[in-house]
Image 1 (cartoon, rainbow, N blue to C red):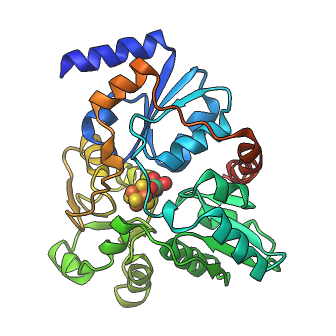
Image 2 (cartoon, rainbow, N blue to C red):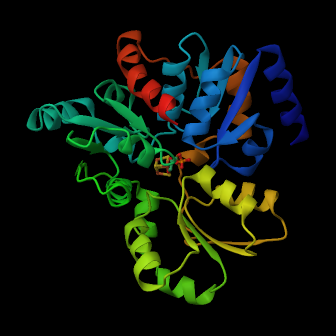
Length: 311
Ligand code: 13P
Ligand code: SF4
């Protein structure tokens, strides 16, 4: 294990590379990364790095976003099979058809979309800034929000904006909606509940937190928002409703606290495609380069830059 870690670090220096990893990556990959974060944080890092090569330990749309923002850098994804079930729920043709039905609308796309879909969009959002971005859009504008229906419902509830919402979902987070939230609440009455807005239960949990429990301990957060909350919270127990990869970072940060995943089965097989072995090969052979054609990148850059300007 130490050998491969040393080899990766050596290659990283030789190639002037930076390793970016999402919060859902396996522990070993998180530990070797220069930066671990959520989709927004990773985009910001990709935008400001001086490195020539970005080894992206995440999924394909995230590497595409890095390539769009930093077209002169070489962006590597160690396994091209690292896709995203949510991003796959809408393609550019489907979006164009949808737009035709609602002329003059503003298209707000979650960052979990392909570059082609971003190129057809007006704004990009991540789970940590979706509410802020939607609030910045003039109230008389009709909004088409895509592709995640749970995030869309959450944003609509938080902003009071009626929106057309695409009916996509992430196969990992959608199932978290089937977990019995009330049982977990009884089991861990003193815990803070941290819920990702992509979860099937996010809207009902929010309603419960505000209506039934008058509970100040239920929070809807992006993955990085969860990290920040735990850092500042005085609670000793946390129930986490998102992909379980994040538990590694949380436990490392606060070893004295107890963390319970709301669902042990919330594992994204796409995120787990990246290993130390394929990261090593990726740096060694400079594979697999993710490069968005400039014609698409130029159009996709605009919604991403608008998003980065608002946060
Ligand atoms: P975050 O932006 O909250 O990290 O979410 C990314 C993602 O893919 C959630 O499934
Ligand atoms: Fe996509 Fe869901 Fe995996 Fe996130 S957890 S990368 S939304 S499939």
